Image (cartoon, rainbow, N blue to C red):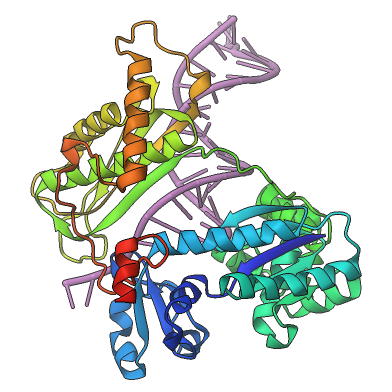
Length: 419
DNA sequence: TCTGGGGTCCTAGGACCC
DNA sequence: TCTGGGGTCCTAGGACCC
C-alpha cells in the first residue's frame, strides 16, 4: 500500500507555530514580492480567499475581516519541513519526499489493520513532535493515496488519517470525487473531460483505456490505471539529480536602469551555481530571460531570451556570472523597464563524468578549490558573505513587508523574540 | 501602485545522418 | 518520366505538479 503524508495549510501552520495567537484567526502567506496568496488557514479559505489571488484585489476584505498577512519565509518553512520529514522517515520502511510539505510513505509488508493503527498514531506523533498538523492517506496507488489524503481534510471526523483499500470503499469515494481534484488531471484535461460528460473520478474510471490514451496520452492512461488500483508510480527513495536549475524573480518595480537587471542576473546565476555544486553537477547550457510587466496595459512590451552553449561544462561561479552578464546585457532593449528576469541552467551532467575540452586553459583543480572555499565561507558566515563584484553590494529590493522572524535559523532574530 | 517560483514528463516536427 | 527507407537528436510547446 501507498501512503501520503501532507501537511495541513503548511506555511500558515509554520507561522502559527511561533505565534499561537494566530490560532483560530484567518491567516495568509504571500508569494515573493508580496504578490499573491500561496497559503491560507481554514478561516481564510472560509472567507473565500482563493489560492493564487493577487493581494491588491483583497485589500478591503483583509482589513474588514482582520486577516493576518505574512510574507513568505522559506528559510523557516524549509527547516520545519525537514523536522516533519525526519519524523515520518523514522516510522516507516522508507519515504519519498515529494515537496516541501508532502512525502509518500512506503508501507510494504505491513498488514492492512496494522497500517491503520500505524498512520493514525503517526499523524498524532508528527503533530506532537513538530507542532505541524499532517493528514495521512493510504490506498492501493499513489493517485488513490492522494485522494485518501484529501478526504482527511474534508472530513474532520477522520482525525487526519484515512486508509481505503477495499474495492467497495474506493468505488464509493470515486463516485463523489470531482475529476478536477484528481492528481494528474489539470485545468485543460478537466475541461476536455467535462465536455465529454465526465465529472467524477468514477466517470473517468469507467472510460475505455483506448479512448483515454488517445485523448490524454500515456500520462492520462497511467492516472486511469492508478485509479483502477493498478500502480504505475513507485516510491522513489533516492531523489534524482535535477535536470535543470532555475532562479528567477519579479522585481518590486520596473527596472529601466539595465545595470540593475544585470546585477540581478549575476545574483541569480550565483544561486544556480550554488545549487549546481550541491548536486556535484556541471552545466553546459545557460538560458537567460527578461521581460516587461505583462499586466501593464498601454506600455511597450518586451520578452527577450538567449541560449548560451558553453564549450566547457563548468560549476565555476565566476565564469558563469561573467558569461550570463555578458549574455543578458546583449538582449535588453533600450527604453524598456524590465519587471522580471531569470537564469536557467539546462544540460546538467555529473562533474565526475565531465569531458574537459582539449583546449581549456584554466586550471580545474584550482577552480574547484576556490569554489569549495566560497561555499564553505558562505555556509559558515551567511549566504552573501562572499559575492562576485558584479552582484553589487546593495541588493535589489523586493517587497517583503510582512516577514516573520527567522525563528529557527537566526540567532539575531531569536534574541529579538526573547528580548 | 499592486498579479510567485521552481520543477517534471511527453509529443510533434524539423534537421540531419547513412 | 522518374526521386527511398529507416533512423537519431534536438527543440519548442503543452500538459501537469507543489
